Image (cartoon, rainbow, N blue to C red; front, side, top):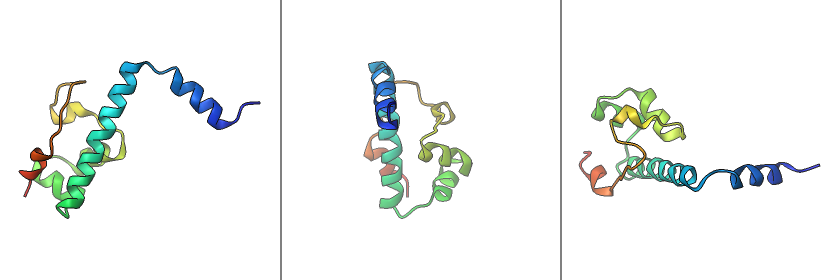
Length: 89
């Protein structure tokens, strides 16, 4: 009988490189949003107000379940630069 780690590794190995790339991109976006919030001592509520979005949308972005169509960015090629977050005051 396989253990959970073996099962998980088997499932990950079956994922296409394109999907893995997109997942990594989303993870990077989430990490950058989180880092920017911490750097600016902002809450998700603060960011939501400044962006004119609901707290629920921001929560989805930072929880790993983003629907990036919510922010109007083209998929799957999205670039987020730290300078974008520097405009948030």
